[in-house]
Length: 329
Ligand code: ADP
Ligand code: F6P
Image (cartoon, rainbow, N blue to C red; front, side):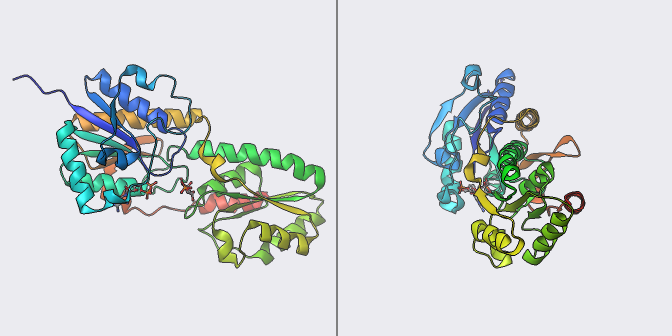
């Protein structure tokens, strides 16, 4: 009996991240090399429910490796969280002949992938988010580029801070995870890094600035993860900068970097990581394996059961935080 040709779908879901295209490309090319048909599903789970899908060929992913964003677009789809939406997705997969799905996104998207896997459509998750907030993966696709973007921006801010003897307060993304702030803070020599994992006091920061002023330091960088101002009883970074200026005498300005952090060409590291993950995802689906996430751990690509991965607790890098504090004096 002749074997039926496999068909897989690929989608990007949740917030976009640089390197998602590299992952899509790896999925498409790996699959086609193995005579597996690929459907590109547009706008995440919304495109699955509509359905809105395109047949991918070798050239569909040409000239995408270096591009930020996602050629498949992305969206958040509340209907998919309901049982009715889930059943509809299952039915559409059946009608379109989809034997498995690669879902590139964050924890929320993985929950959807698990639910759909349990209903008979094998799904493989690839961590795509700039926040690096997926506990099971040491690095997520998008994080390295975002940190490099922040570093480039802060280097520019440093030029003007240095010229004016100012303090530059920079707000970066990361609602529940301070990895962008931490890594960018170390890479930019920030005198203080404020992030959700660690308590902070304005008094402590003022004291550190006064101490370093006495040793001749004249300009400062402070990195703040979004949302943490509330924890210190301050409404926003602009108010925080004004407070620092009042108490230290150092003229201060705040900059909110915002969505610029989500765009741009993926770094080499990102492209390699995404390519490895995309390749592995197809290998798993080809073997009929679903309900897994493909992640990076200790410089290796490994895969875990989705629920097991979702239940992992992210370990905050206390040592890097201590190093940042110790060498920014
Ligand atoms: P991310 O994947 O970046 O964490 P979201 O949390 O916004 O982003 O989730 C993206 C999409 O994944 C949601 O719009 C929804 O369609 C789906 N999703 C999120 N949470 C669940 C859930 N608990 N069960 C099923 N699907 C979910
Ligand atoms: O991708 C993660 C993230 O960038 C968060 O750090 C940020 O709070 C959020 O997405 C903003 O996403 P959006 O504006 O698309 O809702």
